[in-house]
Amino acid sequence: MAQLLKQSVKLALIQLACTADKAHNLSHARSKVLEATKAGAKIVVLPECFNSPYGTKFFPQYAETLLPSPPTEKQSPTFHALSQLAKEAGVYLVGGSIPEREDSSDKLFNTSLTFGPRGELLATHRKVHLFDIDIPGKIRFKESEVLSPGNKITIVDLPEYGRIAVAICYDVRFPELAMIAARKGAFLLLYPGAFNLTTGALHWELQGRARAMDNQVYVGLCSPSRDMTAEYHAWGHSMVVDPNAEVLGQLDEKEGIVMTELIQGRIEEVRKGIPLETQRRFDVYPDVSRGFRGTE
Ligand SMILES: NC(=O)CCC(=O)C(=O)O
Image 1: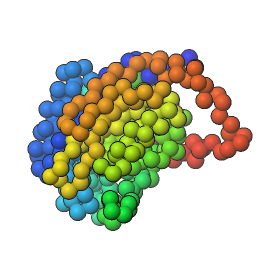
Image 2: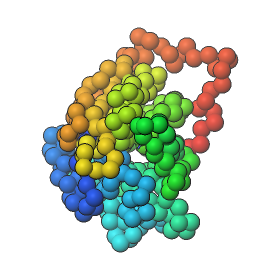
Image 3: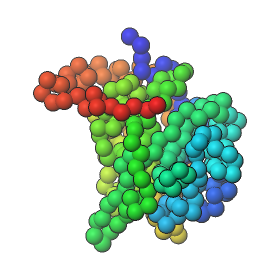
């Protein structure tokens, strides 16, 4: 039987120190991506909002226009920087996320761009579940005050390796999205994300491990490093989880790179031991993947 991951591959999550200086963020991301690829990574991931501070008041100021695609250099310097970088490094690059402005509607989105090793755009994911929470005395954040949600699940085919799914941060809390992607054959769920000091300690690792355990796939969560001088304090702790929900690598709050080898055959080995796939009871509950609204 064909294996979901066609060959073992090195994954790198870059826990980048993101600043208010977009040009600096782009050049710093470049040097870190090249460092990861020199060490053998073939799939590299950047954090949520890696080219701007994370905060609703910053999104309009930092937003770039991505449509019609490809945008001009002026419309989206980040699109071009990521495309060139993926090509220079010869890797699959999941470019974290950036604030996007849709010119035709003036709407803003939190959007992730994935490029292939020839610099080609493979997929665009607009954050589907906006981060709207209010925990009295701790944190209030309402992305929906300025952002609009995306409306699709994003699955990307990497011909040499197989399928991955890309979603953004708060999307990880919705197991339906992960389950659909896994049932459509993804071997890896990637979430550029920026949890905070309240929910990070409680739920970050739990969410990553839960999505891996539910679906018996690899999961990667990629955060910015923590900057206590910024308005939003990111949790950090970028991590890779294996299909048996074991943490393969996790950083602390500082800048760094998590490098992990994803092993061909590991998913099938785990699924053979605990065969959830063949034990599902869609006669008792509906198959959520039937309502799937696909990627292009
Ligand atoms: N950027 C985000 O979506 C943050 C999500 C988060 O912190 C959470 O607890 O969920």
